[in-house]
Every structure is written in structure tokens, then in C-alpha cells.
Image 1: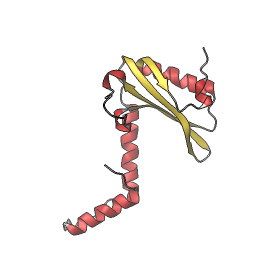
Image 2: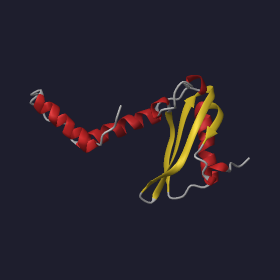
Image 3: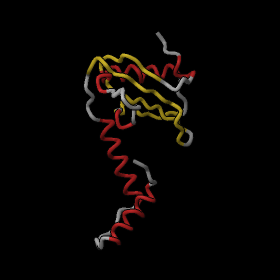
Image 4: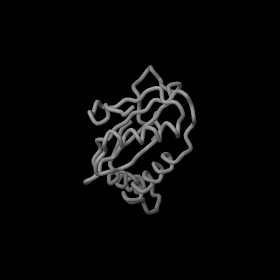
Length: 137
């Protein structure tokens, strides 16, 4: 499995279209980006299963311009395949929010919202950021 940029993906579709003589227009790179965003929005807003074995992965270091994203991904312990590394497609997006500044208290509030959506969180993991290490009692 590999990945390719949206612009390259558009070019690949163009090559296939010419090679197999489809005679149709190919999607532009912006169409691909739009569909990925729509699928992401759909996944984020799916009703989550309420269970007692959720594991969360929290990261707030992704910068977009002046904003930083807080991303909370979840996976149920019962669905972890311990024979291989965890993959992004194994997880579900729980919270994706942006802010100019994330404090420990802000992250804690979002973690509590995650618990309301999911049920019991058995543990959460981070990249060791000092921002995410402190959680108010």
C-alpha cells in the first residue's frame, strides 16, 4: 500500500482514462480533496458505540496556519489486533477541533466530552507532550 498526492491522483486518473479510452473527464485534485473531507466529516459525525473498553489517542501538535488541531482518535480494546501495529484505519475520529491555544484544561474538557460520547475510557495515550500530561482532578 502506498500514498500519492491529490494532484498526482488526478494525473493517474488521466493516464488510465487515456490508456483504456474512457473518453470521460477525470476528476481534478480539488474534487479528490473535497471527497476526502466529506468522508472525514461523515466518519467524525457517526454515532459512536457506547462501550466500556475505549482507548484514546490524543494529539494537539498538528498546526494549520495560526491554529493548532486537537485530535482524539478512539479504538475499542476488543478490536485491537495485537499481531500487528495499530493503523489509522483501525481508529475512529472522536474529536477534531482547532484553536489558537490549547491549555491542559481545554484538553480535559474535550476528554470529558469524549467520555460522554463513548462510555468508559480505559486509558488514553499521547506523544508525551507536557500539555497533555496534566489533567485536572
